[in-house]
Every structure is written in C-alpha cells, then in structure tokens.
Length: 330
Ligand SMILES: NC(=O)c1ccc[n+]([C@@H]2O[C@H](COP(=O)([O-])OP(=O)(O)OC[C@H]3O[C@@H](n4cnc5c(N)ncnc54)[C@H](O)[C@@H]3O)[C@@H](O)[C@H]2O)c1
Ligand SMILES: N[C@H](C(=O)O)[C@H](O)COP(=O)(O)O
Image (cartoon, rainbow, N blue to C red; front, side, top):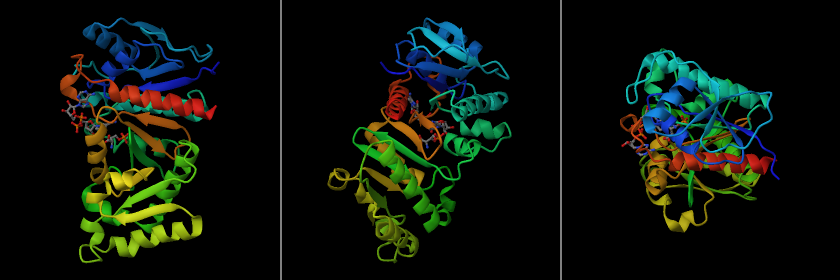
C-alpha cells in the first residue's frame, strides 16, 4: 500500500487552456490527492463550459489525504481579481496567477504538498500587471531562496537541460561563466543520480557558437570558458562529460544512444529539438529546488481555451512524472 500524498496543481493563466487541462485530468482516478490552487469559481465555470462533470470539494488540510476520485476537484480557493473570458488575457488577473504559485510554493516548502505540477502561465500579462516575471523556474527559485536551479525537459528517449533559461539572446554569452556552468552541471549530475537513479550520468554538452567555435574562428567561449570548466569537473569530480560538441550535430543517435542528457547553452538551442521530438508528451522539471516541480511543455494556447480541443498529453506526462518522483522519495 502506498502512502497517499498531496500534490499541488496550479492551472496557470485563467484565460488559457490550463483550467481545461486540469479539469480533464480530474476525470480520472489518481493514487494521490490532487489539490488545485485556483479559483473555485473559475473551475466551476470552465467545467460547465466544457460540459465536464465536477464535484468541488473545499480543501481541508486537517483531513487526511485521499486518492483523487474521478469527477471531483479538491480546491484551495484563490480569488480572481476580475472575471475570466477564455482566450482573453486580463492583466488584472496577473496577481491572481502569482497568488496560486505562492500558495503552492508555501505548501511545498512546509511539507503540506509533496510536489507541485504547473499549468501554463502567460509571462507577458504578469509583466503587464507590473511584476517582473520571467518564468516559473525563476519564480520558484526565488520564492524558495534557491540560488541556482536547472530547467530540464524530458520526453521518451531524450532529456535536454539548459545553462541559461529565460533571458534575451543578447545576454546569453555573458551569462555563460565557468562558475555558472559548473553549478548547473553539478545540480544536473546530482539530480540525475538521486531523482533518476542513473549511477554515472553521461552529460553531452553543446558548444555555444556555430561548430563549437571552429577552433576559435567562430567564437571563443568554447576555448576560454566551456572547455576549461568541463575539464576541471572531469578531473576533479570524475564526471562523465562529453563536448563541447557542435549543437547542430549533437542530436544524432550516435550520441543520444549514450547520453543521459544533453546540456544546451540556451533555451532555443535545445528546446526546439526536444519539442520536435515530443511536443505534447514532454515534461519540464526544475532540478535543484527543495521540492519536486514538474510542468507542461507548452504555453497558454489562448485560442483553444474553453473549446475542449487542447491536448492533455503534456499535463498527463507532468503529473505522472511528479507522482513517480514522489513515490521514489518514499
Ligand atoms: N509552462 C509554461 O508556463 C509555458 C510554457 C511555454 C510557453 N508559455 C507561455 O505561453 C504563452 C504563449 O506561448 P506560445 O504561443 O509561444 O506557445 P503555446 O504553447 O501556447 O502555443 C504554441 C502552439 O502550440 C499549440 N498548443 C499549445 N499547447 C497545446 C495543447 N495542449 N494542445 C493543442 N495545441 C497546443 C497552440 O495552439 C499554438 O499553435 C507565452 O506567454 C509563453 O511565455 C508558458
Ligand atoms: N521554457 C519553457 C518551455 O519552453 O516550455 C516554458 O517557458 C516554461 O518555463 P517555466 O516552467 O519556467 O515557466
């Protein structure tokens, strides 16, 4: 018999597909309690719009956790700031989205929740609401006082982790310091061992420049920063690191058959490949946090909100993956 835990779920942007996907997940049984950090009113309205049955249960932390029962939704209510029209962003609800994330973080930090699974947020509308916000990854790191975390996306047969996340391309080169690279690799290595059970992880590292700099003719970051940082980790910490290899040819079977993960230098170097392989069936995992956090691989898809046409594959993958990690921990 497994011990039933509580898993927080944040549906994300209220005008997007997040609420729809959470409601779809709620239509099946799950072995742990799903606690939705969201507006009850929003979830009831969206369920009616989608024609999905829904029995809302007000979250009571004093009640022992129960496995999730199909057709129900345990909700810890977060109040909307303005009415929601599916597909129409409203900056008045920017703070509502952050309230849901803060509620989940607080519960994860206190041990009330064993993990958090996040639906998609709209970064732009939160900024328009007056809060500087670049993504969940950075938000959870900051809220939990974690100096460095790692974004990793995974799909069947491929994991891709990133050295830099949501920053303009113009800042990437400067952000790739030996110190940052080594911190990222240490977190990645440690979590591949502890969370994924890989004894001696093999990490294949992309170069930054075309052809990994072509001996310095096409950029010097590989010679001056990346190679020395990798050499030091190989020599002093015995890590199995390969590269820096040219990013345009690293994603081939010859390397991927051996790699436990590919480490890309920036968001759009690694994620297009991962999403080409597994969009809709991938999970986004934040490594290095003091709690388990998984997420979908897609955004708010505003045009699909309230239509019932959004694909549930990635939220299902994210939730299943969080449950696996939670069960491994116990
Ligand atoms: N996890 C997250 O919070 C997350 C992830 C990625 C993007 N975003 C944010 O989402 C917003 C919109 O971003 P975007 O337009 O680049 O990406 P998007 O993923 O919302 O949409 C890209 C395309 O994929 C389709 N799509 C996305 N999810 C789908 C699903 N579940 N089922 C069927 N089709 C789906 C959309 O219809 C669209 O054609 C941005 O603010 C972005 O920052 C959030
Ligand atoms: N980089 C993610 C992706 O492309 O799927 C996405 O923007 C979400 O990131 P956060 O989990 O940090 O919000």
